[in-house]
Length: 565
Image 1 (cartoon, rainbow, N blue to C red):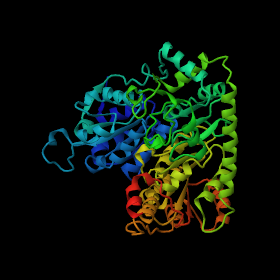
Image 2 (image 1 turned 90 degrees about the horizontal axis):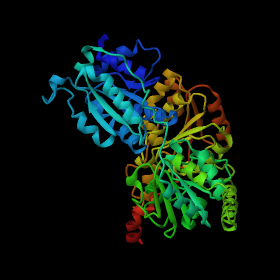
Image 3 (image 1 turned 60 degrees about the vertical axis):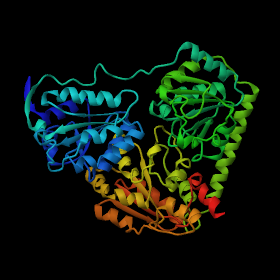
Image 4 (image 1 turned 30 degrees about the vertical axis):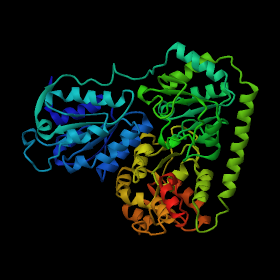
């Protein structure tokens, strides 16, 4: 038994869990933890400039590594409330973030004390679970529970409030136990009867389609999925944000479907007779909840780890509760010896021909590099010059939404987006976390100028810690989605849409990073290559045509189009 402070106990628990990186922002409520981190050489502390962006780093680290991302908010009150957006984002992405928040001293609760906020209630709706420590001696137990909960299926963020008096208090602790005995390596599968029925449906499919979602991507099971796809001669399309669920180089890769996907993938979903939906809710970004985007007559086999997700938005022929990896593998076993019929082979041949033609047309339509620089030309240039190992992070916003299905995802995992939370200001900080998780891979963050304006203080974090990502700022001087809606549906009555920016390349240099600026399409490729090769945190300020605006959510403004017509 060793007598140490609560703050030291928190750090000992982190070490026992094998944590290598802690993101955080120092504050008085957590000083005992920060002081203990000073003596923990195996745990690297990454000090950030804002709690929100720091949680995005922990989120990116968690998604890229498959481990828990840890964030430490040192201040109660505002230091904790700044976590809300980051944790809501992680919650939407099922990302295993463990957030530790300094909290008010126990004796001051309910006294309208300085920086008093009901942190327990605040975080409940946006975490998998929130706790408040009640006794110093329970720190090892509560820390184990935080990691166990975050990493157990289905994964998600948790928050542990740590009252400052309990961190300062000393207690005797037994040995600290790590994750041994609670590893979550194995998944689970459906009953033999249901698997057999699913296999029979797939055998009889004339136009089979696999729709891969986050369950495929997060479990890294593309090999099992591709083996099944080859057996069935089924193209594989992906839900938006998960275009890296399988490598883009595979012949059956269809890209992302739906309103935010490509025409070929979307057409497959509208015509397929049997759809195997693996690890996906078939939700909003994939379908807009509309049969405009998925065949009403298709027999859907939906595979989900969450029983409540099955059949929630679309009726299904079969619902299989289980892990994407295990069910894909089991279906592959049941379909051994199956040879796709002539109809299925013709379906796949037609798909590959259509996709090849689409890719050729996409490159052609991107143009030869005329000025002002067009988004499509930017995306084509990135496809041409970025290496196969590139991992991409993106914001929401129309430029990033257009980019998502326009890039090459060769080595999964390779794409990290806000998903259903639709967050702006996420990409750059997320990329720093991804790079720390995968230091040997190229990491490129795309975002608009408005979103980058929210997050550029973290250039200081990148420089201080030598986190060498490349951020490409697609600078059109406006909030592009909203300006497009004002143009298309509100009679060009512009208000609040334009964003005056400093030269972001010069701002990067002031922080000590490498800054690059692109004003001419002819300079784009060589500038991006220089940024990748510079060996420093790099910001590329790309001046994009301010008139190249696109209204993605036309469905939301049908009433305006009708009233104006």
